[in-house]
Image (tube, rainbow over all chains, first blue to last red):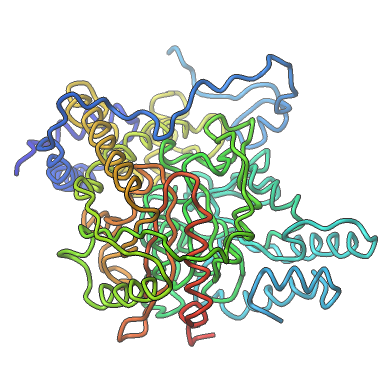
Length: 97
Length: 487
């Protein structure tokens, strides 16, 4: 079955996912996503009338804990894997141009 | 020495050997076998021996010793370790050194185990062959031209190749059980919430679980009871007591009702696997269990449901790789002055094809206009799948079927066809979707000498029942004693 996925759809999704794709990748993903989405489309044939979506497999309720201050990660550790930092903050390119 | 972890720690506690001797033995085996198998992404002999020395000193000082005292354990490289890089098999985290240990790693250390290495995996655990690791594929010890399975391929292969007796993997859709099947070892995916995931790098949070791999049910029980339990730092972990799985291994099987999943013996299943499981069913019946046919009508929708749910969650979880806080950042000049370009360039340069594919699929399924049709609908079908299990477990105590449709396939055979790779997980994804525990264990061999695996499933938190059956099967059969010939 045809899912109608085209290059423009792949490019739009890539933008949302913050991925920059080569022309070859776009071409390949049109084919692969069409194939996978075509397969996944079988779910539309299942009768899900009056079926609630399953958010949690087990019956879990809110996990609350006492509001006590506990130690957090020291700044030095938090920054230790940063690609760029100045000892106090993470450094990134200008956010507002 | 011994190839039982239970005996290894007993012998250590009795003074038959030291932790340093044991650790050196496994390091020697790694030296001999690792170049053929490539199960590990890092091995640190000096650190492992230093840790072993500390455990030896503890024993010499007469201090009380933990449950895994003196046993070398391998840990999948998706689990955070403060003293070792944790790469997730990705260029994105090639040099990442977590600022803390995962709770399961803390528990291993508290039990006096010795961390011997970090094992190979498909990048971010996305794959069924460990061919998608950014650092080279793992070879199956039974046939080096074949895949070890995935994503915990290194975790299974290191046990099969005698380089560790206990190994921690992770399972989102079969990532412990399928490699365990391909490598002829036991692999257990615990109930969702049984084991803390603090420090497990997230793939699909509603499905991921950490679990043990070993040769025997006895060793699997030992490792599971060490790592299981509630963790205040993981609010999805269940506040339930952990039973002693080791203590119930010999409870009689008489009267145990075992549902044979008929849907899993239909088209697509290899004939030799089907036959081996029929022999297993006969054995169970002789042991006093009561097999009866069961149907899981929605199980045919497992793969489709899984790939929508898992990819959607993955696309969200992997948004954290922003090249700002940790991980790879592009050195491209265009990205130096432009934040968006930095994100896009860094992610595109550092993530592999399979990971990009899943992020794209998940983003598509969650995007405006498609959310209801794909993601929301998949969650509804997920409920129907879980309800199938609930109905089945009202009639039977356990469910039985194959782990994989075929034995280990050849490297390269499926890596160019994503959908055929996804269908590898056809029998395993259901346990993750339903949140129930399942164990894969060897129960035969193909004519070519490759391991065949059966899968047992239980109701939530009934891991003990699974291990009880596997243990007694192993007490009467030899499949778990078969070893690949290369070593």
